[in-house]
Length: 119
Image (tube, rainbow, N blue to C red; front, top):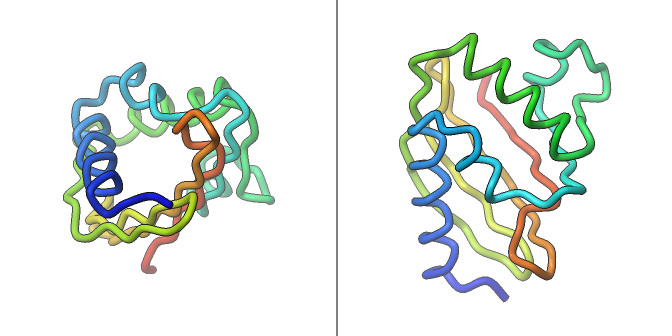
């Protein structure tokens, strides 16, 4: 079980990492076998499934996204906790709100991430 204290600490660091635009810092939260799903993957990477597999492939996607949105900034709204996952609800890019569900492996790294956005 992930405590609310652990979930909040992770979410604060995660948001700070994104706001730093430091790709190594961002990637430090993720496992090598990461699966990332997002509607932005469909648009930016022309991947109809919306899913990218593998940490290095996700890194390339996020590098492209950071390049396209140089003023990217997230603001944390709320964090929810579950057994092996958390949901981070935040103000995202392009005036959108997002809820990102992050599933953790046994080493505390994110192995699966699913991003949801208001349209």
